[in-house]
Amino acid sequence: MDKKWYAVVLLIFMLVMSFSVGGFAAENSGSKKDIVDTAVETGDFNTLVAALEKAGLIETLKGEGPFTVFAPTDEAFEKLLNDLNVTAEELLAREDLKDILLYHVIPGKVMSSDLKDGMKVKTLAEKEVTISLDPVQVNKANVVKSDIEASNGVIHVIDAVLVP
Image 1: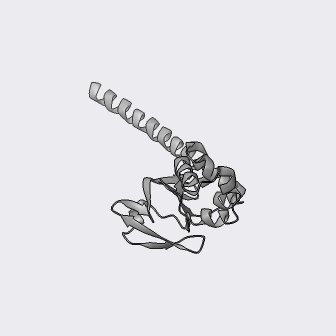
Image 2 (image 1 turned 135 degrees about the horizontal axis):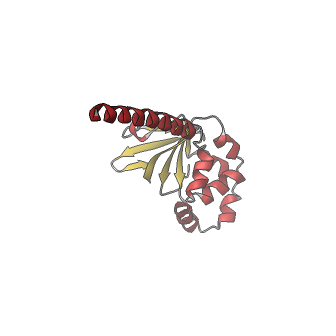
Image 3 (image 1 turned 90 degrees about the vertical axis):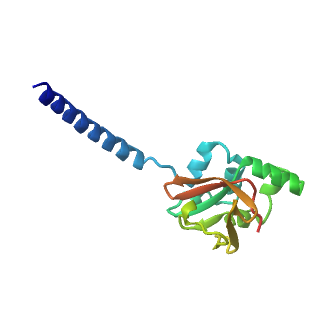
């Protein structure tokens, strides 16, 4: 009798858990943020988001996509500002800002497992970037974190700003 009771309790527990897990999955599947909201949420891409806003690209990267974004961190932008000897305001005022940002975006959702050594990929700036795998780089920028999924694509974090 104890074994039957144990089996019934276990079966009920499993049924309850399967409904709960299904509910959580349904809740989470619709809550994935787009590329811009994902970048904002991390807190490491304030300069990138400001540049996207200044260049009028927020709506593009909130769009359906899918997009793959090689996203430079705030630290990467600081390094670029020092290298160019300009202020953030001067960088955001550049006429080619939109092209620089589009050079970081490729059409489609490309996960790290899809990358091949020496691969050349055309960006939305209509220019190519080269992928290296040992170490993982886009041109000369190191990929420091990959495969951050968003509802409309994926973000790969890089440690330098790509300049076409």
